Length: 71
Image 1 (spheres, one colour):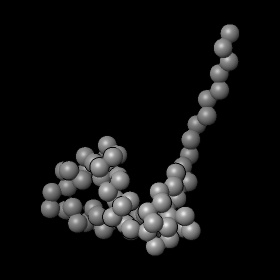
Image 2 (cartoon, rainbow, N blue to C red):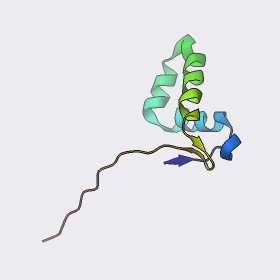
Image 3 (tube, rainbow, N blue to C red):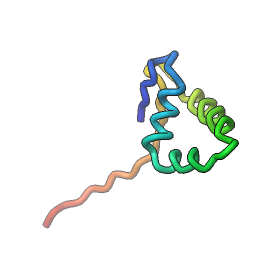
Image 4 (cartoon, helix red, strand yellow):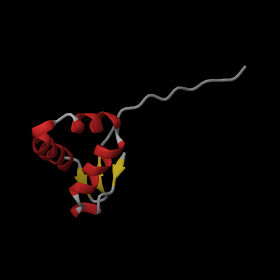
């Protein structure tokens, strides 16, 4: 999965806003963070900075491929 938040010097707010407004678990976490929202924002940015590269932010993910045959 790649999030291009403006390339290598991308805007952290764009990536954070994408998750906070569009990804259910992060959306709920942020909605219930109360006075710790700034801590969550700081940690979110620090975590994603570890995955920054030439195209923006890209993280390797494991996945399962299921193949089937119709009879």
